Amino acid sequence: MGDLTDKVAIITGAGRGLGREEALQLASQGAKIVINDINLPDAEEAANATVEEIKAAGGDAIAVFGDCADTADSEKLFQTAIDTYGDVNIMVNNAGFCRDKTIFGMSDEEFDSVVRVHLRGHFVNMRNATKYWREKAKTGEQVYARLISTSSEAMLFCSPGQPNYAAAKAGITAMTLGTAQLMIKYGITCNVIMPRARTDMTNQGPTAAMFQAPEEGFDLWNPENVAPLVGYLSSPEAANISGEVFVVWGGRVNIVQRPTLDKFYDNPEGGKWSLESLHNSLGDYFNDDHTPVVDGFSVPPQ
Ligand SMILES: NC(=O)c1ccc[n+]([C@@H]2O[C@H](COP(=O)([O-])OP(=O)(O)OC[C@H]3O[C@@H](n4cnc5c(N)ncnc54)[C@H](O)[C@@H]3O)[C@@H](O)[C@H]2O)c1
Image 1 (tube, rainbow, N blue to C red):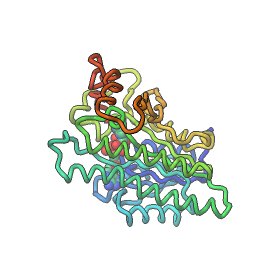
Image 2: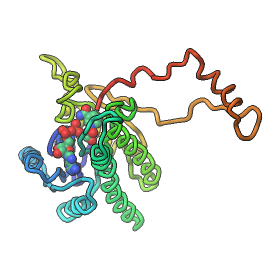
Image 3: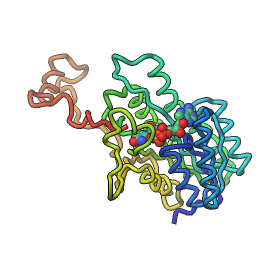
Image 4: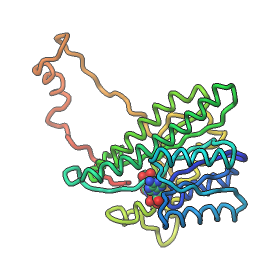
């Protein structure tokens, strides 16, 4: 079950947190692991430690340092995987950071840097992987390929203290589901996870209390709880799962309904709406009992 022997996986931001657990998981299933993290001393140290942990357990891994959102660095990451292991089969986009502020207090830099690391970080690595897989498939070669993106419930709840992050995660979700539509004809699957776990990202600020480990019993927020789903989506057994979004934490996997259309109105007068005809239609729906802000929007998972 879940055999990934001879498969090659790239995971961005895999020195720490969820990426590290996902690297250990895929290595335990037999994959060769290419660990990316940013070229800063503490991140490099963490990535090297993950490599050593995989090797100590009998696996095979290398670290490639660079910015996941930089075109040249991402191309170097992909090429190093090919040069070292001869192929890439699994691309897990995971790296990122937060700069939380409300919209009225957010600087250009806080907005741009978060959208860049998450959304552009996914884009450049998804482009490398899908281009490579598509070209291979077009030569008639059988391609084994899995793409896994990391979004967040911040997108579902539209996290009001994270407009940069929630927007980036919404973009990642849309981009991955669109890519899934293009790639399924080659047998390539593309899915999205929305994890929750105690990591450097959540172990500070308002979320720190929520993610505390219990004194005894099952630790719901241990990041290792998220990794089996990534292992499963990467596996041969998950060949027919694509274009799906999963919330995952503790012992739970929650399948997210794809965004869809709700109730609709056609202008009863025909043609272009007037303000009066719109009000007659929508006014009934959004009546005095309608609550403008839905309960749950204030739930703050990262
Ligand atoms: N922890 C949660 O509850 C939670 C919830 C929802 C989504 N996520 C998402 O999961 C992913 C992993 O987050 P985490 O909680 O493990 O955080 P983390 O801070 O523990 O790990 C993030 C890793 O990404 C690396 N990184 C940052 N910028 C990078 C860059 N430019 N290039 C390469 N690597 C870079 C960091 O050095 C770090 O090792 C993120 O995409 C995050 O948004 C986490």
